[in-house]
Image (cartoon, rainbow over all chains, first blue to last red; front, side):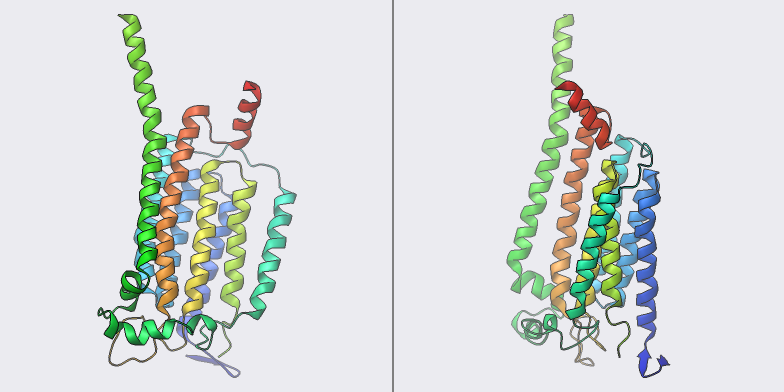
Length: 198
Length: 118
């Protein structure tokens, strides 16, 4: 614990800042990289750093989901795509002043919106009022498991989870249709040419 | 305790805008998907950062603790992470399909081929 004037700075706050800056550097480096393998690895590093940050912010469930699903499966999927496509971006394109302007304006507006927000860690913030106290203090009695995230996910917000499974099913069906259909067509055309040869 | 105050939100906004810039300005489709991913993870970081409570611990009931971090953002983001991977998978499948149809994953070359065809 360090004191700076009237402020008390906790070790977790320092960790918070360091990890966020690390994430920022990773995100910005993506703009300048051209090798797609490096880009995908950077994206994996970005996710893993985020997973560590979630532990600093006491959200352990999100942390291991991010580490396994976000950093793991996403990276593997992207590498698989890379194996089927080109390894490198063709060339550095000229600076896009229009998109840079759009991004700056959007960022400035969002930054302006944060002025009204409660500070980090404020127990009185609106997000920590409303339903959150009920989930925290009643879920042990009402649902059972000691982990509040589990009880909220499975009981209070069960429909969200049902919707999530629907989305996963739809995405899986979509992937199979998109990739599978092309393969089937290729096989059919091969069959046709075989028939012609005969 | 004023530090870090709004610092987290500002960094998140810059990261989000970096992802956004990659999506709208870069021509490579895989790079666009990575940019979208960066944007997504920045939003997750923003949500989880909002749920943190001073002096709280992980939201698991324990007799020694009375202050817990808010479980609601965690639940929302758990759902969002999985949905995010599902959409990434779909986007990458489309990239693979585009590569098969056009032989390239650069958007200006795809555009040029489409113009040549019509």
